[in-house]
Amino acid sequence: MAFEPTWRWFGPPDPITLSEIRQTGARGIVTALHHIPFGEVWSKDEIIKRKQLIEAEKLPWSVAESVPVHEDIHKKKGNYKQYLDNFKETLRNLGQCGIDTVCYNFMPVFDWLRTDLEVEYEDGSLTTQFEVKVLAAFDLFILQRTEAEKDYSNIQIQKAEQYYKTLNESQKDKLVQAVLLGFPGSCDAYTLKELKSALLEYKDIGSQELQDNLFYFLREIIPVAEENGVFMNIHPDDPPWSVLGLPRVVKNKEDIQQLLQVIDSPANGLTFGTGSLTAEKNNDLVDMAHTFAPRINFIHLRNIIKKGNHAFVESYHLDGDIDMYAVMKILLEEQRRRIKEHQKNSRLPLRPDHGHHMVSDNEKKNTYPGYSLMGRIRAMAELRGLETAVENCLES
Image (cartoon, rainbow, N blue to C red; front, side, top):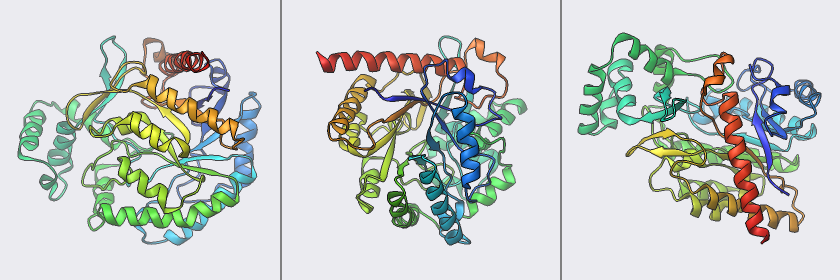
């Protein structure tokens, strides 16, 4: 048995259709009910409606990504108890409808963050990147966040100022649009005013407070997931360091070990996001794959090229700084162990986490950055080829 190759689909508004996805090599769909406001219950009717839409194209709904965690839960303020109850009800409904794998994250305010969504790669394709000097330029001179200078070194501030002075108005607007982009699957984006307000909500919430709130969330949620046959899988922070003064608590091996130990249950699992974790220079992906393999229930494979401290560009999946062969081998060995032990979570859905925007992708308008058709087809092909090669080595 090989991993279940899956494809992220953003529902009916997605310009990439289910019939096209069937031809990519995908054998399962990763999706979410993006039309339901954050914090509200995903009803059985809505889940079944989406499931039937997918199954009409002879594909299964493999993973719910993402079931969003409301900001009140992150902050443990306001209506957080009601939102927790709603989250539990959503998990019950998913489990009863046969959706057993859920991906979520605990990143405040942003689901991910890049400073350039259309950087030209060496072959002319378009990819995304993050540079701390560019974010600092946005933070200090465009957003003008209160006391932002405390979060950067003098050298970083100097580089940010030098960079900012090179930007014309069009380039400034492009930077603002990149940083303010909304969650994948959403057409919404923050305004500068909304972002400043959201960040102020975290002025008294540091890493310890956010981690405590995550652990509280897990103690509340995991028993419900367990009762309903659902495997919860937290996605690492992207990028795995503080941005715009916001704390990060799923950024390295220590963070993940702690959250998995809060409730030692197969239902308390990990989405293994290689690109997110590799961005942090001290993370050893091969070691982390070995350590956390028994708790990985969803695989996001992406590769990056580091461009210094807190800077990277998204590469093709077989380029970059990650030893993708070693990671694939560890996870395939883990899958074989689960199959031998007749574990329920042995299918291990995998998806190519992002792809470049290639020339022929110009025909598809309004695709979310990283979620092009042809770019992800190439990614899928590379990963399935690598998987086949590793499997053959394991059998020989």
